[in-house]
Image (cartoon, rainbow, N blue to C red; front, top):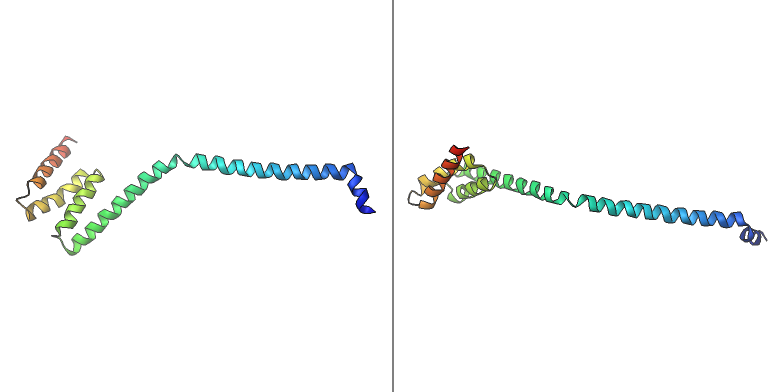
Length: 125
């Protein structure tokens, strides 16, 4: 008999409706916050990609330097170090390994031309 009276009680019905609306509202509010946060974070991906690229280049530079500590005349490591520093826009830093490459391969005109370009650009700055 208690069940039949609770179903007919208007206060009980209003309480159920308010509870349902509260649950639906809090769920929608949470989903809205989730989607807006996801859209706000997208522009930062370009910045994080640039930071990631710089970190990768710095790691490559350190790797080549470690190889050159063990093998100072390793031409592959010297060439890689020059390329990495050029990509990092470290023109003065690329001059020293490039000069070592020229000493190891004096007939390579490409290295000499690159060194001439680097020295002229570093003098301009």
